Image (cartoon, rainbow, N blue to C red; front, top):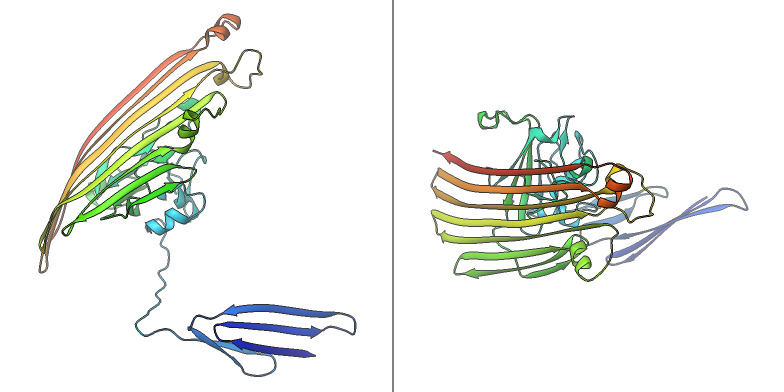
Length: 356
């Protein structure tokens, strides 16, 4: 026996199907459909209910199939997706062909190729590693040149992120895996954001038809450390500042300037005397600090079918790591290791794009 009942309450519709399997057992399936003027329910016979959706005029649904590697993500995706840390590079591992060596950093492994074979760009121009804490997730906290714990360009000021896999363009001759290209948002609204990534505040305004904004972020863990919260024998912190301004903006010409400044630190202290030792790192004092800066200007000319865009970006970063064995353990265990690592990068990039 089958019983169907439909109760129409305007936008809210209730359905249930009751099936008697025998005299003592009955199965009831109950479900609710909420309709927002996009469909209607009609009972065709005693066993089938057809839903006939209708779309508003002018609305078109287009399905774009995923092509391995080449993908573009908007701010809505990496701001709300779980475990993204507002970092679009971390979302890549959810797509086929991508993986990461560990969860501590946003290193990109595409089709088995190492992160060192990838490249970072801003507005299409090459930049140095734009990530805080480039020692995150590496062996013995050694700095790497292509990844880090957190992207210094916050998700709040990024417009989109595009990964181009195995680019064939001659300008990418030294790239084997892919290129991560980021673009800063043309404008933002004033906001205050508090999350596990950090405390962030931004302010944007419009002067005529020109947009100007700035955003500052301080790490949440670093803030708790300043308030006296103890996280054991390791202290981690970072901060960054992003700026954007339109200098010229009219029908045919536009000129914009942008910059991002940031620094980060990771201080590891040897375990206290009497505590158990599980690895050699436990007897070491390791201090890691880094600073990075990216700044540039972009000019665009557009008229009729002619288009020209020129982007000039200067970027640089310093990574310093000092490691030494704690005095107590070097005397008692007669073991000692001292290591200093210092990496400096400077990059000048000029990217031109035109259509004649």
